[in-house]
Image 1 (cartoon, helix red, strand yellow):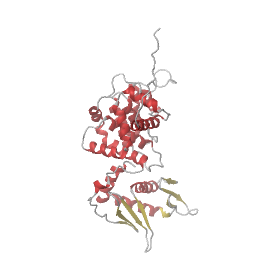
Image 2 (image 1 turned 90 degrees about the vertical axis):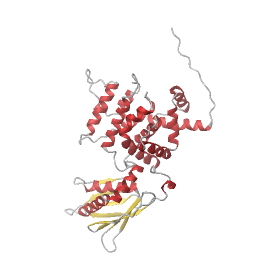
Image 3 (image 1 turned 135 degrees about the vertical axis):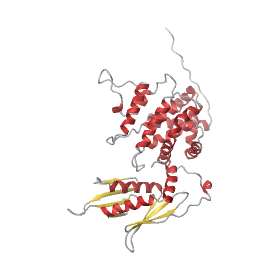
Image 4 (image 1 turned 180 degrees about the vertical axis):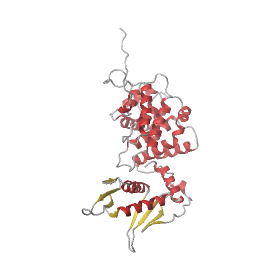
Length: 378
């Protein structure tokens, strides 16, 4: 009888810098699986994998904003990104997809979800032959209703094979084009991250070639994920923006309402909504995240089918009927100060139209696109 392989315990003295890297790696692994993991187990994994890029990911995440800025410069210049840099993008994209509604007002667009699914397949097809260790994990991150129906027994789950994974991803992608589908494959980002972080893949040039078509999607999601985790945009240091001239934005009027603009730091801007009357209230909406949410609230409550309320991280809106047989009204308030304003349905539609017109102005459109690059798909 062949004897079992003997395991040995190795004691190694490490410096504080390496200990901090291993601790960051331990936290990263725990967030990926949801299971606790020890620092010694992480060290064992790194020794067994013999891959420097796994520690490179840990180092990149130690300075997330600076790392993403460097990655963006390389990506926009068409340069080859390292495997660790693509993994870092996928790490933040995963958090963008899994963010709660309270963290960002808008769900991830179907276009971006499809882009993540396509990016996964593009890299999945690069795997070394016979690399199927993680297929069950990938299948578990996809909607069960999109998995192939087993041929024989109805109660038998689909086996995790490369073919099953590919077919499930493609079926999930097909379902995303169905307007009746209300669910989102939010774990698709985690699948892409694990694929890049753990699976057997070729070199950086092959990975970059596969992911290049999805650069813009992955960047938008990475910037969104960065904001969810860090509560700040991916923005160049102030010194790099010195001397940047920002022309003033003209005001715009729709009916009795006026929208004025004020420039802020960098490309930031805020708006002032002026209400009717000689002493009408002036309501400021400051900063990109609040503006994103305010516009989302305007659109959602202006829809013909809106009958209830709307809640975001900054604002709350509600449709009420003051008395039986009286016209409905829409009221909104900010969570932080409780100040409330009421509108008739027609007035709310006017304000929504005012914002739409303002965002069609070239100066506002350019500034908004520049901010979207820093904040991502909020």
